[in-house]
Length: 255
Ligand SMILES: [Zn+2]
Image 1: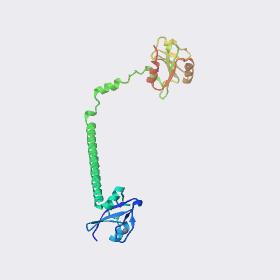
Image 2: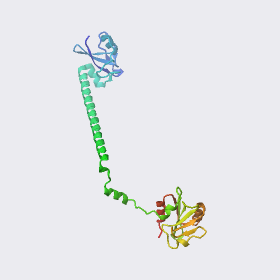
Image 3: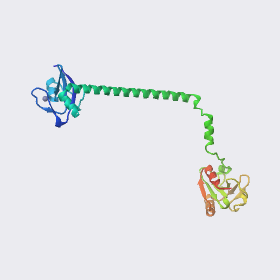
Image 4: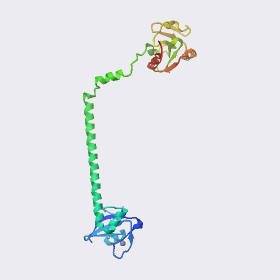
């Protein structure tokens, strides 16, 4: 028997509909089959569909619904009962809209991909061209932005991987202690620069004056020096391994 399965639909169990297979008399709500046969539309339960045509429905079915059947709204159920052809027309319209939407989505995807390719091509061109050279005005901007402090000369006397200890003493005199990179002891530097009478400011027991490098050369242990300075310091101290940070601290309010 020639037939065409057009749709598989479902309705709420409370609003089940009558199977149109002669002498069946059952009401069905899930997997309702809409079939076109000899120019007529028939609505069948899944069992009657299988009996009438001798096949299971779901295999290679490409119409509307499928699986448990497309659930119908109340209005669609009324259409199914009163005007099955109109319901199918509505399905057809929905399918066309869905196909249009899918096509639009594919097109958008294709465009995005093309744009990405273009951006990538421009990037490759940029990297391989001399445009990568930073324009000169932006270099001067970068350089000008953070004020560059000259690193004080005492900075290079410090033992690597150790810290500077800066103290602000009476009369706003700053001193920077550091372990020595060159001898078994420390340096004590007046900061931010060698101020007036710096070479007479500390007792000789702390170290000897080196006028060429503007530091005291001390043979004391760093901890003993820290103890000496911190017990006399009333105006703040700073520990940092960064000479610039220490230098900034000593520039704080020295005159
Ligand atoms: Zn039936």
